[in-house]
Image 1 (cartoon, rainbow, N blue to C red):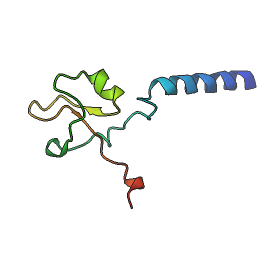
Image 2: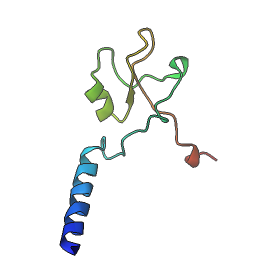
Image 3: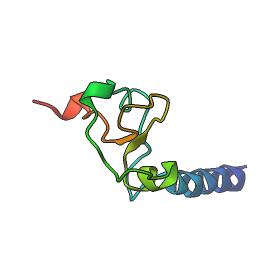
Image 4: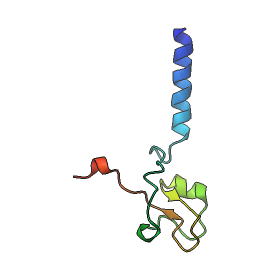
Length: 80
């Protein structure tokens, strides 16, 4: 039984490492919930979602005249 738990834990660690972007944890929906007028550009025009995520940024192309690849909101826990 312990061997099975160890294997599941190892698989979870491996899968978790693939879901990170440049060594950073994947961004949450809350972090990427940035008003269109408050978005700060994180990539060139025409950037793909994967290229954007690889930079550690958020991607949302649902608003045509807003920035699609943008920096996430800062984590409130880190603010003084």
